[in-house]
Amino acid sequence: MQFFKKCYKWFSFEIIISIIFLYGVLSSIFSCANTSMPPMGGPKDTIPPVLLSVKPDSSSTDFPISNGEIVLTFDEYVILKDVQRNLYTSPPLKKMPKTKIRGKSIIVDFQEKLDSNTTYSIFFRNSIVDNNEGNPFYQYVYTFSTGKHIDSLMTSGNVYISTTLLPAKDVTVAFYKDDCDSVLFNSLPDALAKTDDFGYFVVRNLKPIRYRVYAFRDLNNNNLYDPENEEVAFIDSLFIP
Image (cartoon, rainbow, N blue to C red):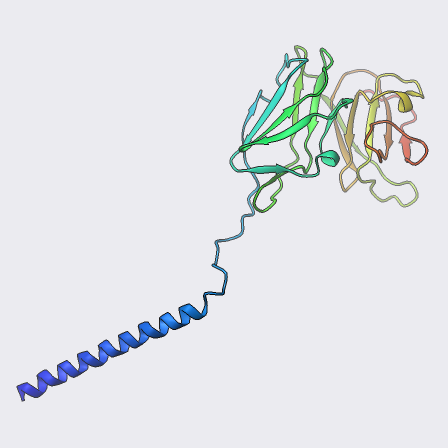
């Protein structure tokens, strides 16, 4: 009787070992059959880049007139997208600032001498996205002054197409110190902003003075109104912020 018990135990143990071995073989076969499937990754990255530091700090004064440089450092690698369309300065410059990527930083260099005692803003709009998924950084505005103080007045509004009353997208809203009618053709604005998808704009760094205000669709991005093919609108009185 004891012999049969031992044999029974041995037989049961053999069956268990065989089943485990068979399971291992089948698992191996199915694993080999699925090698053509791509590896399963983690959840999709939907988090936008985080700005870690800005040098010099935003709203800095006494910014150098020549050879000035701005460094924006993020927590991940970023790229600049459609810079010609998205990035602009107020007041505008004759030569667009030069941008480049260095590691996880964006470097901005100026290609011309800046005016003295002037407050500048750089609008990045939707140009900054992360390198992996293209998640956009929020529409960042960097402000600095070549003088001792920041011109801090601002105003906002909307631009609409008169025939349809629909929002006017990507329209330049320009503010001029000179109230001459021809300033729209001959001079760069003293401050400007561009409308978003809803026709909304915010003009920053204004002085407490009178401005002539125009809006025009700047098709060639030269910050001047070209009457041959560009639409225009205006406020019929001088504006004081």
